[in-house]
Image (cartoon, rainbow, N blue to C red; front, top):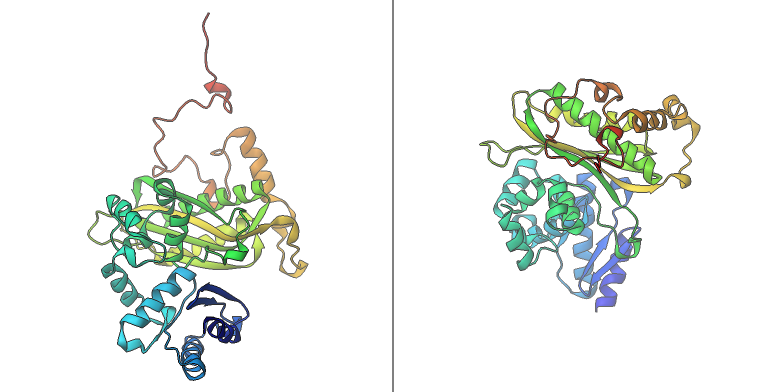
Length: 345
């Protein structure tokens, strides 16, 4: 019965992963990925076909990430209004937020009871809390797997099929909590510019390019109106170009409200690939890529320090007041001449 079930699932998409004897993931055909009506029809077709041919009742959850798809599937099972098929991106954002605020974090795929208790110790008790948590904090306090789960709840696909796990770097995050809250859109523009530029430098260092950028920001957990906007941008082609990454990060800005006290921001790069295998057509290349701006900035910063040169808004100096305080920073004796350790005999 399980074999017949998974054989039927293979009909509905170009890629199929057998997750368990009665669960599977199906890759959505690209031509309908952004069409809620077509996705609803596909889910209904899956459900009806499996029932008609093998007599097994199933529920279907459709979303942009595996973690969201599992949540959508559970929603389809629990709420009769969906009649067994939940297309997550077709639901209203405020409804999703309300649902995630009510469901305990243990409802998330991969969150067991022991991990639930550890998350609760950090103030994370609901699915909404985990989705809003700072990815860098999550990685430090837990591990990269929990961080990926949190990102997937924001719509950032970073948990690949088992057969695709190669052990290579699969995402890159640059994120900071501000020492002083940002209250203006221009301030956030500068922060995002700096973080995107730093992400570009890291990509070049690792010999990689990225296809997807997610920019995000957040207020403090202790404010009356908690906000955690994010923007996923699929780049035209994989790139490490700082100009393109900064431009993509700035697409978050329409969601940044003036006067709100923003406590953190960052960018996440996913769908990373080796630079040497990417050869975009000249039609899609930009002149600033051939000029090697990223490499030039990296070389100058290596000689003069990271704060001496930047690109666009990321190059405005003196350093912004919101940058992380570093009063307790240890001396950098291996990289800075003026911080060499003094030995007296």
